[in-house]
Image (tube, rainbow over all chains, first blue to last red; front, side):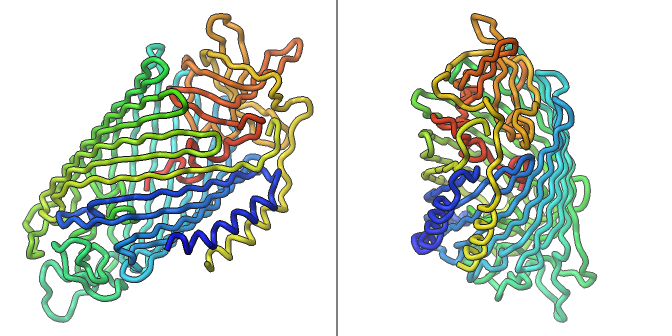
Length: 405
Length: 144
C-alpha cells in the first residue's frame, strides 16, 4: 500500500525539486516503520506493523512562513486504520523590540480514514498566538493562547477547544535550568450525546457512534472486536446539546547539563479538572491514531518524568526517559467484562519507558526507537503491558541560495 | 491521489515567488570558517538582511581569549529554541571581520546543551527551515 502511494508522491517531489532551485524552501521527507504488540492498547493484544511516509515543504517569506505537509500511514493487518493526513500552516513572527517577539500561526489539517474507522475522518483548524520575552539574558517568559476546531465524520466528536499558558524559566551558572508553567484549557464537544431511544436502553449501549457505520459489540471487548465502532460509548440525552470539560495545570521542570555530552531533566505536572467532565461513558485508545480521548483535556492527576540525553561522537545521540502517570478521567466509567459499569470512575496508572538512538548525517537522520508501556487501570480492559519498536529516516533538502539568507 | 493533485498547483504557485535577497558583502565564506567555544552573554533579535525578519543573534565571549563575537543564528530560532545567557556553546561558522566593528560569525553549526544543530550545510546553504530539530507552525508549541 505504501509503495502504491509513494508512486504518486515521489514524482511530485522530483518535479518540485527540479523546478525550484534557489527557491529557498526546504523539502522534508521522512519514512518510519513501526511495530507494535498492542495496536488497540487493551488487554487483548493485537500485533501490527505500520509504515508511515511524509513529505513536507517549508518556505519562509520574510516574517511569514508556510508549511505544507502530506502523510500516509499504512497498517499491515488492520488495514481499515490506514489513513492519509494533510496539513497547511502559516506562521508569522513580529519582533517587539530586540528581546521580545509575537508569534502567530494558523493552520488547517485533515485526517482521512477508510472503511471501519471512517468516523475518525476529520477536518480542523488551529489558531495560535504567543509572546516571548527575555526578562534577563538568563530568564525567559512566554505566554500563549491556542484555539482549535475539528469536525469529524462522526459528529459525536466535533469540538472546540482553547488553552492559555504562561511559563517562566531561569538558567543558572551551575548549568541548571528551572522552568515553571501554568495552563488553563477548555474543550467543548458540540454534540456528544445520542438521542434517547424509544425503548428502555441498557446503561452501556452498543457502539453506534452516530455515523459510525453500524454498531459494534459494545464496550469491554477491545478495539479489535469493534465492527464499525469507534472506541467510544456515548451517553443518551433527550436534551441533546454540548458538553465541556475544563482544566488547570501547573508543571515544574528542572534540567541539568553535565559536561558536553550529558543532559538530565526531571519534570512534574499536576492537573485538575475544574469544570464539567468527559461526555462519553467509555473511551478507548488506538496506537498511532488521532483520537479525541488521547488529549490533554480528558484527565486529572499527575505525571512525573525523568530524561537522560547522551551525545556521542559522530553525531550519534541517545535519549531515554521514564514517565509515570496517574490519571483519572472524570465522567468515564470503568466497565466490567459484561460491559456494565463497575461504579468506579476510570483511573489509569501508566509506566512508560522510552529510548531513541539517532545518527545524524549531513542531510538526513536515521533512528531507532523503543518504548515499553505497563498500564494498570480500574477498567479491566485497560490492564495491559506491551512494547513498541520504531525505526526510520528523516531527510531534508533545502533549495535555498548560498550566502546570508 | 486527489489530494496530491491539489498540492501540485500550490507548489507551482510557490515557485513563482522569488527567493529572498541578501545584503552585499555579507555571505557565508567557507574560506573564513572557524570554530570557537564560547559563553552566551546576550540574546537579541536584530535586522540582518534587507526584506527579511530579524535574525536571532547571540552575543558571545570566547572561552580563554574573552574575545567578543556576534553570532548570527537564524530568523526562525527566536521561538524555536530557548537560548539563555550564561550557556556554553560551540560554534562553527564563517567569520566576517570589518575594521571598527565587532567580528561576526555566520553560524553553520551550533552545539548547545549536548545537541548539535546544523543551521547550514558545508557550502553555507541555509537549512534552518527544516530538519529534525525544528517543528513548524502550530506543532512548534501545541499540545494535541
